[in-house]
Each structure stands twice: as structure tokens, then as C-alpha cells.
Amino acid sequence: MSGNMRDTDREGETAGEDAPLALSDLISRHSSRLTDADTRLLDVLIQDPIRAALENGKDVSSRAGVHPASAVRLARRLGFKGYPEFRSFLQSSLTEGGNDFESPAARMAARLVKAEGDGLLASVLDSEIAALQQARNSVSDADIRAFSETLCGSRRIFVFGRGHFASLCSLIALRLGRSGYDAVDLGSQIHLLPELLTGLTQDDVVWMLAFRKAPPLLEEVRDVAARAGARTLAITDVGGTRIDPAPDHQILVSRGEPGESQSLVVPMTIANAIILDLASIDNGKSINALNQFRSFRASSRLTGG
Image (cartoon, rainbow, N blue to C red; front, side, top):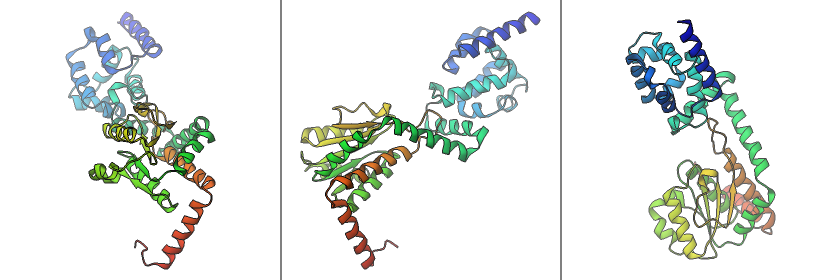
């Protein structure tokens, strides 16, 4: 018995020093040692790895219908000193974006895991601050100016993004419109894309937002822009950089590390900086349009409720 425990301890140390990238690696590495109870536990873990990363060994054993100590035994057979260490491995896989946990639900669970120590609000704020600081270090005023100069001389500006970025595109188009620019939010009018893009010319700009990966429809819009000779702008992260042909100007920025908030704060901040910089170079166009809009809204009954 003592010899087995020493072997287990050595395996636990190896797992800590050279941890597998996925739960499937652990199973393959130790498959010859697994029992029927282990198999039932692993079925539960694989079916819902997110829940597994948040539960203790007793809860996992209960869901698998095995003895409460079975989860501890499984953890040791997989090379860990106990279930808490195994659970930490699952949580690390979750927060580092391993293949076992690549889904929106997994990313949310990862944020919950990170929030356990310092509290949810503090965790979200720390994540946002870190992402904004990274943006400060990776995006220059020259990057912002390249965008604003492209927008300044345009005939029309088409803003396009899918998913969460549809709401940001709507805000960008709204702000540009109030600043006196002919801006179209394509994301809110997907059913009218052929009509909206039929007259696209080289005097127009298509401003795209894509994070994690560029959706197929964005690639289609990019193709239309390329054929029309329209100038293109894109704000993306590493996953969204694969836009072909490449945009005329692109800002590459992270929304946070895996397991962090991944919110819209960073791209929204960059968009706000671009629109503000645009106002500084368009010879009063934005300022005058905003004053006219304010006067019109004050004198009309179109208050929007």
C-alpha cells in the first residue's frame, strides 16, 4: 500500500509539473488503471465539464451514483493527490480555454471560477481594467487617426458586426449619424443587405467588427466591398484577423484573457476614440451637426418617449 501511495505522489508531482492540456489526455494516460466506478464518474465529467469544474468530489460522486470517496480515488488514479487538485486542473482548463471547455457557457463558468476568491464585481472590474490597459499598450494614436481620416472623406459609412457586436455597431452608426455622417448599421438590416450594398462605391467605407473569428457573412460583405473598391476598416482580435482581402486599416486588440469578462468595453472605447478624433479633424462638421441635432431635439416633440 505504501509503495502505491508513493507512486501516486510521484504521479501527482508529474501532473503538476507537466499537466495535460485536456481531460481526454488524462484518461488516455491512465486508462489501464480505471475502474467501473471511475468510468461512471468520467461519464459525468465529460457530459458536463463546466459543472464538474465547479462541484466538489462528493457532489460529482453523487451524480454518478458511486461511493462519495470514489471521486477522490479517481483523482489519485489520474495522478493527483486528491480531488481538490483535480478540480483545480479542471478549473485551469476552463479558464485557459482548453478544448474541453470551448463554448460560451464554458467561458461564463470560467469567469465564475475566477470570481470565487475576490467576488464577482471585483473580478469583472479587474478584468476590464486589465483589458483596457492592454489596449492602451497595443493601440496607438496613429491607429486611431488612420481610421478617422478614412471616415472623414467618405460618402457613406457602413458598419457591420454580428452577435454581441451588432449592438455596438448600432451605437457607432447612431453616433456617426448625429455627427453629420451618412452611417448605415448593416447588422440591424441583414434582410436588406443586397439593397443596401447595391450602390456601394469607392467613396464609401465599410467598418467591420469581428472577435474570435470572422463570421461567413462578414466575409461576404468584405467581398462586396472589395469588388466595389470601397475602403475597409476592421477592429478585431487575433481570432478575427483572418479577413480576406485584408482591410485597408485594422486595429488588433484583445478583449481579455480566457476566463475574463470578454465584454464590449474595449472595442467600444476604441470606437469612441475614433469618433472623437474624427471630430478633431473634420473642420467643425461633427460639432456643428451635434449642435443642430441638440437644437432640433429641444424644439421638436420627437423625444422618443
